[in-house]
Image 1 (cartoon, rainbow, N blue to C red):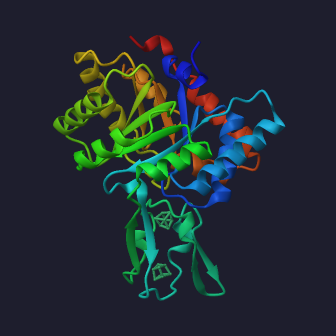
Image 2: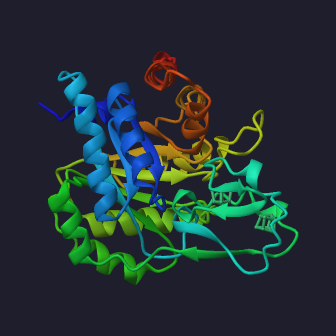
Length: 326
Ligand code: SF4
Ligand code: SF4
């Protein structure tokens, strides 16, 4: 008998809630983990910090106290080996003139107007860059999280992290070192091919790298292909998920050709919403699941009854035309 998340992958309805690889606002992590547990998400994807794991556990436990029948989602920690937009945060420098133009445009309310003076909470920033064009005074700078090591990842495991996602980049050696030294008892390993990788050759090269490094594992392995990450603040009406669906097709075809598709599952992310699974299946792209991130977080912000809202979101996402898949 498979774990729930493994069965969801097989059933092509794996759902991951991306809370944010750079997010350090622990109350928010706790709240989203609580909501994701109520809605039946298979995994929550969080930043790789001890307090993030503790916050996620708290949220999950709180939901399970309210309803003991709920299944615990995987706690997935996201790590990078290269610069990746998911690990980016904006910092405000001394050029700031307090014009406050950035205050209304941040989807995570990182900026506030404190009696005419800008107050900025960097821990709420997840690097979407929506604020960037609004600052005329060159007051924004970027920083990237990096330098995750084996020891810190083992500590996260002890605290309750049971899944890991490694974001690949140009640095293959850093990926190999990190991956081969990781403790091997994560229930799920996920490999993210990010938005920087768009050429077919690069997609195939990274797919082969993942196949070579992961060996013949018995456990399920996920390849997440990112289309347009951190896109929750972008205008609706634009087909944001098409890039991830197209990239998924290339990776799936390659895995099939290499006979490596037995324990690999491909999941789409970046620009995805509750219609993205259906769209992938309508295009005959046989993905195993979807990650909902900034879209879901923005959607929930405006809802009064967040538990009902997130349950509706996942239920709509699961109602796709399965029969259209080969
Ligand atoms: S708009 Fe995006 S990048 Fe700018 S502060 Fe808010 S979350 Fe960070
Ligand atoms: S838009 Fe730029 S200058 Fe204006 S308040 Fe924000 S950071 Fe400061």
